[in-house]
Image (cartoon, rainbow, N blue to C red):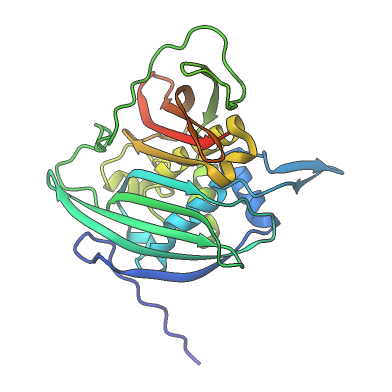
Length: 310
């Protein structure tokens, strides 16, 4: 019997409509899932070496879930024809989940608009656990296709809030608590961008081809090389905040990132941050951090802010 392959929609701004829904899709947070993202993000915070093998320990790092959540639209749109640029990412964490949890993912296009000749789409997606509780909510803003005449790498996104990279003098804090003073400089984290990790993160398991994995496609889109997904920078920022806030970030944390310019294989990205506010709320003190990512040439590739209750 001949099987008819599924028909996918062309990933264009015109084809997106507000109210379009995706899912439900099941995502099992098993050992393989965790190891794949640990490699792709160079983040072994949820792993421990036992008898020479990497074994999951503790809750699943939340940023490992968000990438699958954001890509839920690819259940309907052709993954190999996406030539867009991720602009902004907002993530809210509600609940920590253990390894082995089965999540249900759903998504909806909640907005689309034209601005300066570019068509923007806004996707809101939710991950729920087996009890029906929300684990993560995310909103992604994306330009579905790189418009003709737009030079990639000149800063397409416009931050909703100005975050200014600055020189941080003095000692750096390794963690954040309810008593951490506003103005505290936070330790830096460095990430090496590698094509192998970009490909695993983007979907090598599913043979996904595009500007993140295929050099020919990237150059046809006007890029000098493949570019890393903007979501990788959001995941690094989430990892950064998780390491500073600790477990509380998994259930009370949120962060908002804006991508300013592409990052390429062999780039070295440094994340810096500073505590910018601290306000009493129900359950403790909500402490906020501004962060920024810069490459080896001191160019700012992304900025953002995040917070959690301590």
